[in-house]
Length: 403
Image (cartoon, rainbow, N blue to C red; front, side, top):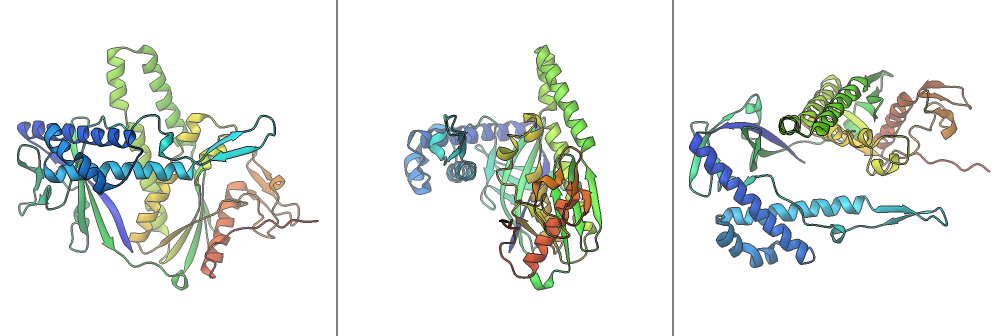
């Protein structure tokens, strides 16, 4: 299989090169907005050939883009709309009938969009060996609307991905504050871990109270508390509220500085958590996580604030775990989350009343087994991993109907 990651390299530019690159990024974003508006006005026909025929000359003449950049604009916008289309299909609109009390789910598509996708932030997509290339003096050659420029990248440990077994791909130029970064997509062909070669299984339960709880074949359970993370997120939230209430120019400047800082901090936390899981695992380990697709819609009916619900970065943690595990020779599978917190891992009895969510405890009325409810979920995920290792392609728990 091919494993893809993104190298985030900071690049150093001269004063005149900064202006050239910034102008190119602004025009590229303007081209993206033109294509986005055209798709919105023409029933979202995501056909690159048709878009090329309709918009290529406008992108060249009106926006001033070069040939390769005009094609990159079309591909980039089409890919974004396809991503939104997939997200809408996976999260249908749900509403409750006030007469019958039943919930109805309506499928969604791109026609539900009230406005086209916006491209206000300057950006630039560069194709390998056409718009950007690596020079012999370890500098990078980047294409702009005026001319090609040479920039110096800061590698900072990314040298391991510049070997011949890694294939360089499309690069994206972004600006964060006063600095410019080049995000380079690299891919590598790696070997997958077959089921017979799995030597250990680790079940991982993710949540808010505990960021993750892991349980392995030796019976060891590790808890990572989410209290410190929740406190820091609450601190960021209070700071933003305070600055928004002031609504002064200095407060707005401070908000711009804080923009993205919380997300970068949380990404670093997820990186360290996933790295620890992978580094401490034995060779050929199978990590089992819950498939949490649509979990926000399900938890939205519970007693959780909107801020708590949408600041839960469970998907990012899973993505980091997947690529780090693949590079280290491990495997990750996602299994259905049904009954993982209701099933007794000892006798297999499934009863939601056995779990006390307020006190975070679990007590089986059949075999009297007791433990932390998050630990119970991790143990059940370990059991699903055993089912997968035994040959089941769709491991899951099924509740038996008694009587």
